[in-house]
Length: 465
Image (cartoon, rainbow, N blue to C red; front, top):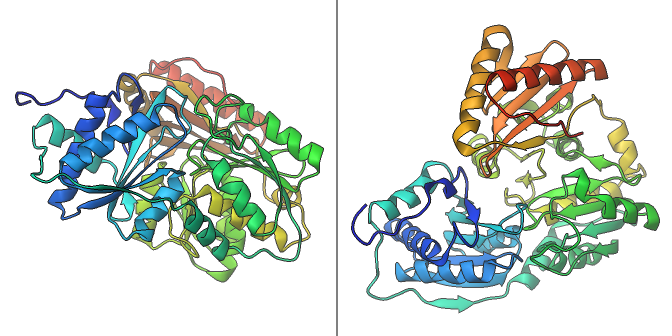
């Protein structure tokens, strides 16, 4: 590291974003250095204009100002679109015709965290490209332009909502929906969009508040859904939809207030897409239920297994020219009638369109799917230094006596189900999930995974259901 080169923590440069504690790991000096390195990275590619946006977190205005400072110092100009959801930021790359940008967001993480999603072209960078930003800093390769980049401010909320409305036309059935924005970014977009396409809307926690006073903004976790479930039941709504902090992930409860897993929601969408596109490639994330590849095969799709991670799935979709994919965590990617990025508002619109064209209740649609006892996606703390070693050890032990899928962590194929262990790419966390054909099968598979983790030196944990 050359003299005067800022020291930045290496561990915040993760697989598909930069993320850490806002006030210590993403302090002003670090964020400005990241901005200048990113500006250098882009200018080397001949990119000199970017869009920048931020979520509702209390630390976001400061971090956004710091990233703008760094980017412009490298000679890259900025279109500041202000407070926005992550999908609004993604759309800004198309709307303004630019090939770079930064979304300042902590996504679904606790309030003390924040992060940076960096784009190049029309997609976020990941893997080695994220590490290249770190190398530019530590090797002292950042550039300082003779003429700094300029900054202009644009509000694209209205054209973004108009774009969404233009892409969704509902059928004859009137839909009543509860929308829970969790005091994140969703409240400024989702209710207006849903009303504009003809829904009867009940709003929950639409006011942005970075302290998240009502519940943590992660609608795929059962513990954060009581208010949404209660509102659906009390209002007689057809469904409830929740958004995470930056609105790139969707969570759904049906008309009975039951939580719908992300892989079940994927199948709802595939049931609409595959009849129109027989033979389409179905990218199946490793955390998915065994019913997803079997049912999409039955519908005429061609399933292939793939890794978790929004940037990784989007990259695979481009490679495969895939029409749609998703993650159990609630990211949904539509490329059949949309741009291919994860937009929870658009995903909500597609779901509302499906329901508006059928007399079936959402609970009835889900009830017709094969259903197997399973755990939820269970996340438990494990240091970044240890988590990869534990996964490697479990994978090595499983490969001796079981069929495995090792494209992302290890998915162990049992006679009557499966288990999964993988490392989170965004947190010091291990992720596990199990599924069995019967409750007894599930219990046996869970015990097997617990044993393997313990033998690998991993922590004890409780399964989530």
